[in-house]
Length: 347
Image (cartoon, rainbow, N blue to C red):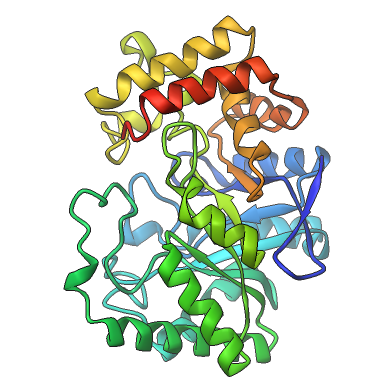
């Protein structure tokens, strides 16, 4: 396992991060504990969760259960100081959350304190804003995204308020570092500007979707990452398991995400199928496991701090973590490039 610097800090995180969003819904607590045990044995020291989890589906009655699964593991194993723990505070659009009608200073601090209780820890290493307080092109909203409809000053005021609240949590020792998620280049730049002007915590990562079929990060966000040392923590490196090939030829495995969310949050659509098949064909042509090829590609990107994997069974988890040992040849990378040029935004 290789380890990367977390922003401009002295914290080192494994190039593979263990995602947890299925624990408490698609996975039991004991299965979550088994996954953590195995991941740690393979060198993973980075876990990512959120107050919103588990998801698929998102339900008010299960909100926070994933953090409870992790907290119980810490209590049993006593490995808290060995793990770099990331969590997130959710915002508008999920009304069962504390900040469900919009972020507030008090709401952010209260949400963090409740996460700490569920996680059975005194601190969170990386606390992330799960999505902006304003409109966004993420979650397949790019087709209707209209930033010109936003009040620019209000957006800036919201960012200043959010970063100020996070700064207070850092000062109180409840969080160590600050990150963003589902954020844009402009938004991230505003956080960086404010941190420099007001001596507030500097953003170290942005957790955005990135995979062979969603490479928006390659553009302006990659430039920001290179010049500002704000790395990507990519989620959905397999495009919600599409890139594993598990759904090809009409397959619908029992307990899989598509049994609950048919279009995989706008990913599994007719327009995406030719690109998906092309990437699966590359793996077959070069004798590679498709999931491992897809994860290895993400790991190889120069802006990548850590690639977040998730699994609903141990076979998937072992396969995904083994991607750390896969190096893609020049021929594979050329085939990926040619396919990307043909289908740059298939979803």
